[in-house]
Image 1: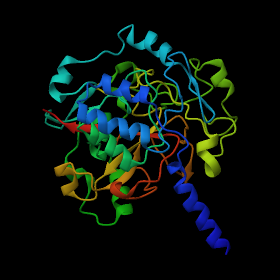
Image 2: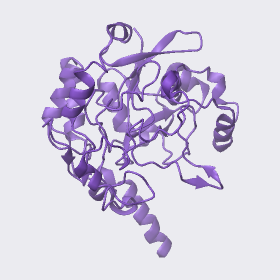
Image 3: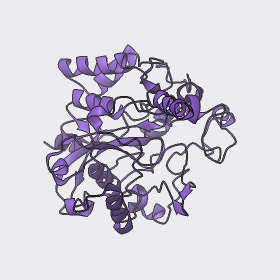
Length: 360
């Protein structure tokens, strides 16, 4: 009986985000549609997904640019208006006509392979891929891929995400599909991987490997955090967690998604100007299971989480080894392992995503 109750509680938690606590607004949907100049057909599909899918939220609940406090115990570190003034108005981030011509879409960056040729483009920001907007969270990977497809894209594959972070996409042979056992494959990849961080192409940042303040991990140590947001940070060995947050019991109601506006930490960018790959949110991607998945760009693999996020877990170890390392090419632990097409229930307050597509 006890085992049954434990199993039941796990099932309830895993499906927690499907409850319709929140949906995004028509105003937000219109903002995304306008920003990306979607066709009427694309706009209709995306609007339905954003406004009718249960649980999706930026945890802000308003289009007021001066607002930074949202529902679910959220206090974002700075407002979107502050981000616009600091980042966009000063030109620290600006659109690239060259990238738009290559990718055929706004705010996407082409990612080269080892030969310097680019066949894949990736969103420069976490969805909604709008600079200075709070990213969308509580999105199961199945829904994330649907959102990407509605815009003529798809959920990124793991090797594409890693390439965007590290500066180039590695050959398929590096992914060790010759090893059948998944855990053994992960260990093999991690033992041989290149350790590099997105921002290390910048000479002044080349020696930094602690991403917390540089990349927007929500921390009381960060001087940019607004006083009221700082006061909402829980005294804990896990950085950035909200007061009252009980993630293992009722995360949706108690844990604030305290994300920064996308791109606010503008130095935390890759060589191709892809932002927030080490901070803000974890991002779900499609983890291919064999060579054909990568070659054809199909979403037939499993969910993997990439990057770090505002809850800094870098100190968590298993058998003396860091459990959640933060470098670009690390193969993260196989958690919540489901095929993307069946991953319709699991989501969390610190998980987002970005989309990929082929170049023109």
